[in-house]
Length: 86
Image (cartoon, rainbow, N blue to C red):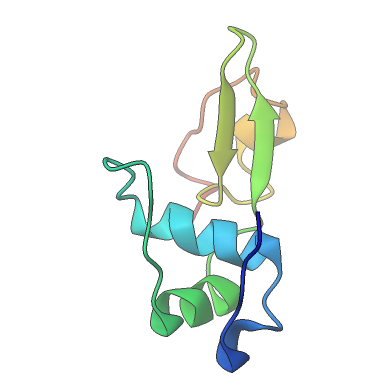
């Protein structure tokens, strides 16, 4: 697959792009169209992108949980308590 990037997004990492896609949370059509504002927000806000293999076999891709969240610190063994994710 070949992709081309406009000048304003050439320096964004794949991580930044995935974080922007997660922040839009509109995957119904199995694609997401990201505008430059989405990409800028993803780079400057939110938590790090994490991929967590859950005990039931599912995989969680998230940028919504802080490093101190029980979901993150337990590697998916505990639930998010919402207190540590602000």
